[in-house]
Image (cartoon, rainbow, N blue to C red; front, side):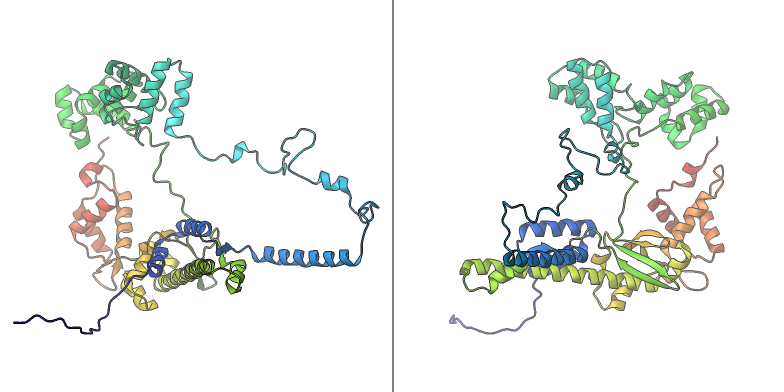
Length: 481
């Protein structure tokens, strides 16, 4: 059997992800703030790109340039002797100097630009952090130099809830001191505001706060020895162990529930999120109008200066190659941004068309919808719709929602059309909020209540939705006192 070399041609289709296509896909996933940051980075890196000013500024600039040309032409036709002072009589220099709002020749300081504007101090909106709040108290508490170093290290290792998750032996190793010194300073830090800061676990945190309550011996005993029973609401076991009545336990539990399990969260509230919508949906008469939010987004264009260099014949070959490469990158970026904006607009228009009942009446009327529905409506792939709706928010007459919020699985009704899963979650939340705290509804009872509202759902689905919403089971929601 002989070996031989042979050449052959073969046709095949292959998807190649060019850098330009990768950039376009990346831009689809960016939200408004990330897109603005990306544009600013491109402006710094690509000299071909420049930011377009507002139309009014462009018109004023053009008029100013025309006036400047006219003055230059007048100056050429009419020669003026600079020593004669002719032509300067029409300028009131005193008014000109007095009109400058920034500096004063008398005190060499800043003058107030507008007395009606708020002071500089009132514009400082950032609240102090937990570390800043505690360090300020340390400075005023008469700590020694060595104690200050230890206190700063302890405060620097507190987590967002105000707990010290690192061991005192590790802190002592870092500062090369005794563990007893760390423990001594830690006890002083735990006396700072907010009370309970610097605790190693929940039990210690509650004990620190309980010691501040008068006549709290029973509360301290329950927290120190029966915290597990308290979490399980096994009050019978506590009464037997301590030999007290249910009324006494009820009084102690009210005091315990008034304590703060996470003393540091008032300085770090993750639930407070400030969102600027990417799209606005306005109701104009009987129609809904979709408007893209482009405030803060730089308007890009290709620089005329570099285009003239490229058209010229005197530029070096390497210079032209560099400019051509940057020009191609700039044009593709601008085209990708425009395509991104058009895609977001089309996707939002499709969502508004399909979710009109929600916009009119609220969450209860949210329609079941999947990515495939919108993709088929606008003639795009599901993956494109998925990228466009990620991390994008829309302002509607019903509030601000993420675009992903409108895509829900369907829950069957006993009669009629299916209902969106998000609408069912909202209904479960309303039922639990309206229940009697002494006799909370079980998951099976919630199933029966939803059946009365023509919603067919399994008990395990109720449990899954309840856990997704962070709602406890009926046994843990029950309140005896």
